[in-house]
Length: 331
Image (cartoon, rainbow, N blue to C red; front, side, top):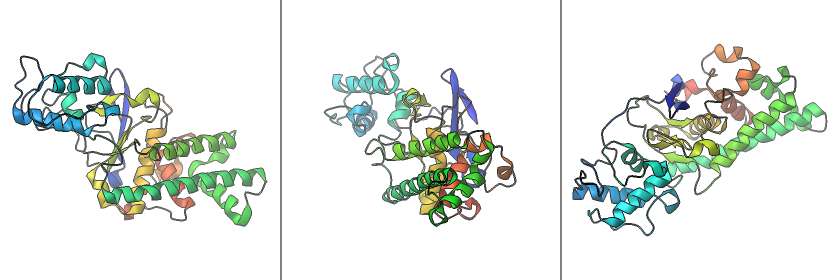
């Protein structure tokens, strides 16, 4: 599920319903995401058609200053003068680094694709999608509570109250087989760290990591959502894949087809990929098996389980008393 880019291993995960995750397509399209027909900038080769310049100016204005947007915003007048050129260069420097800042928006190239992509997080989600986010947070919080109760139960210091600790331990063993490791406590800490990462990622408002986006150009796998292995980590956040920052979980339009439980399930699954180690570490949260595709899930080895995205979604939903059947929820 990987593609090679930028001299390192980039693993992308696009959740596609019952088929599980697929890598994003790597084919490159030369069509303009912004809809421009010729280059915009101050170089002699730039045509600077008024309609094209307006699209570039409007797109730049969508981005906040901390993401390279102009401050103050540009006047959308269709004239590519020094201010527009400087704004393009500032945007490129922030998004891609100084080496990529030539002040030109070429059709279908990196700057065009990024300007045509998501501008910020949360605020560009549909109202329905935003309404599901608190549900996701609540499920993750309960999963963490179950981990703590299971640990107390095994230590014999009260986590067994009303059977919650023992029940939590049994669910933990069912999905992660932590009892098979030399140190079950170390595995609980690892699993908990993944859920903590999820909480941090989606609680980072307004500059969170959830954005609304279409599949990238050249990809047509039918994704509900997609992200990149380890994109949460500082070493990965400013890197890009076909113009898209890898430090984001992207929700596609198909996510609007899902009810709140299915939405939460898919997002927790993608967040596991996102907050786990980077794709070139050999320790990333991968897709070794899916619960809705027996019997492989039941035969996973313990190490595979703690590095399997579906285990995190399955465990989380069992802790809230709602075992999740993907086959009954999505197409």
